[in-house]
Amino acid sequence: MRIPCPICGTRDRREFYYQGAASMLDRPAAEAPLEVWHDYLHLRDNPAGGTRDLWYHASGCGSWLVVERDTVTHEVLGAALVEACDAD
Amino acid sequence: MRFSGWRVLKEGLTGNKGWRPHWRNPQPKAEYDALIIGGGGHGLATAFYLAKEHGLTKIAVLEKGYLGGGNIGRNTTIVRANYGLPGNSEFYSHSLKLWEGMEQELNFNTMMSQRGVLNLFHSDGQRDAAARRGNAMRNQGDDAELLSREQVRALVPWLDFDNTRFPIYGGLFHGRGGTARHDAVAWGYARGADSRGVDLIQNCEVTGIDIEDGRVTGVQTTRGAIKAKKVGIVVAGRSSQVAAMAGMRLPIESHVLQAFVTEGLKPCIDHVVTYGMGHFYISQSDKGGLVFGGDLDFYASYAARGNLPMQEHVMEAAMTLMPMIGKARVLRSWGGIMDMSPDGSPIIDKTHIDGLYLNCGWCYGGFKAVPGSGFAFAHLIATDRPHVSAARLRLDRFETGRGLMDEEGTGAQHNLH
Image 1 (cartoon, rainbow over the protein chains, first blue to last red):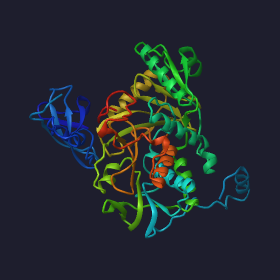
Image 2 (image 1 turned 90 degrees about the horizontal axis):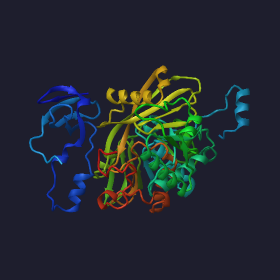
Image 3 (image 1 turned 90 degrees about the vertical axis):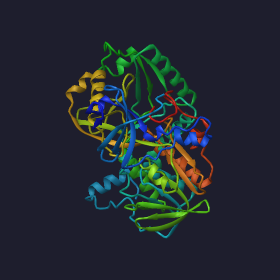
Image 4 (image 1 turned 135 degrees about the vertical axis):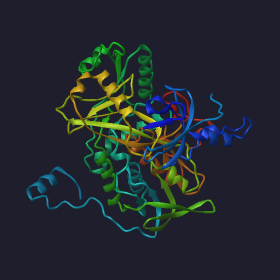
């Protein structure tokens, strides 16, 4: 699996750390109700097919990427930089 | 049809003409008392125990492919009860007891081999953790023995004990653990369920779950609608898709876990051995192949096959632990689809929909859980109350934060197990 980093070009999957679903970018407000936080932290669409997930180019430019992939075929369709994200 | 030594002898002398198919291939009926979605190990075991322990016989197992074609056919066949936390501890302890009686209970040779599971440790800290885990296992009533380096050497002299980076300090030995013939487990439960009147319906994919006023009323399938007041979802690997038919989102991410087998070799590995400094475990099948596996590939996947980086990592771990494996040739590799839950532990629970029950989240430990999971899920479906061995495998533990079972101590969030 190779991932097209917008900064470094297409690189081997070994260079990247996988975080999980890109829904992690939609962080609720601190005072949001428990169900909203539960939904954000634990529940997942977990699609069989097209998905958007977060990868960190750890052995490259250090960017966080949103990668579009197919979970059934492992095809990588594209990657874009995460514009603004709370990276804790 | 019962198996016995006498029967095998008689059939052998008469041209093996008396054997019959082990289960029927029935048409789905319009209505059942209970439906089990998923004809894998857990689903078939659930149907078997529903019939045997609870006297329910008007039940059907709906399988979209063929029986035992999912993860029960794609694992490394390891059976053990070496957990440390309440919840997992009593559940796997109960499951191991069922394993020990399985062949008699099913009248089927599942090739259960209690050859012992040896978890190696490579530092003082790991020794302390192993001692603690061993104590937890013994407190649960199971067996565990802390072995010194020399005791381990006497058992498995072919390991690299003096590895510069990760020398072997000793091991935790769980003698009642071992391996079993994975397909035979599915077949044995299928045969046992069928003989008690359960309809095993293959090539029957569930396409919808019917719900009226918060109660389940049946399912839609590729072979027509089937009514039932109780429906159990036990489809690890596809849990999120089936639960979505009932409008549910689950705390599950599906990941790929790879395993490997070498060409057949003469007997050389007598136990299941796990490496403490890399995710690596190995045993030898009765056909002689060395069966081994490692960690997840660590990205969401339904491909049922993995990629080269993790294969390379597993081979490196193998060579580090036991250099002799370098002379074996890998025959094939495969991948299974793991239901990864946030805390790395499973779920057997009711849902917010009356009559709809959920069994999922087996992470990479589903095989050893087959009998315990089937037993507990059958109890839940039949009585609407959790079985005592599985009362802590709750769906709501992530939302409430109560009763999380994070064996690795890494946190109860996705991507940490």
